[in-house]
Length: 166
Image (cartoon, rainbow, N blue to C red):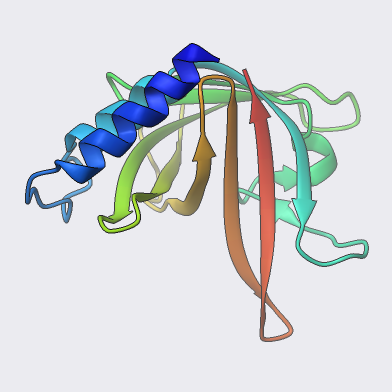
């Protein structure tokens, strides 16, 4: 609990004292992003995925597979080289490891909101399409992380929430 409090205090302090650094480049890493990178480092489990609307939906997440296949998947993030991988473990799914590169990018300096950029790659961390996905990093602590992706459903915002635990 002390570590979480300390991390939140440091994030608030750094946000209050931040310099005028530009984050227009995805490789720029202001101090706030470095704190987020330290917290994200390590192994995570995607425990649950929820939707902002009730009902049954056929959703393909990260241009890969279904909600049911992603729940229980294991993820590893290595911030010093912006690489990682996730492994689909569900027996009724196309199991195995998928590689990606990622960037944590501050979106709004006034609020401290972050986006998570994830680009699927091959095992050599090379992208064939050079396309990635932008996901809102809604919260991040030492042992929990929440991603939110907003898509459109019938012209209205539809939020997919992904809940991770360490």
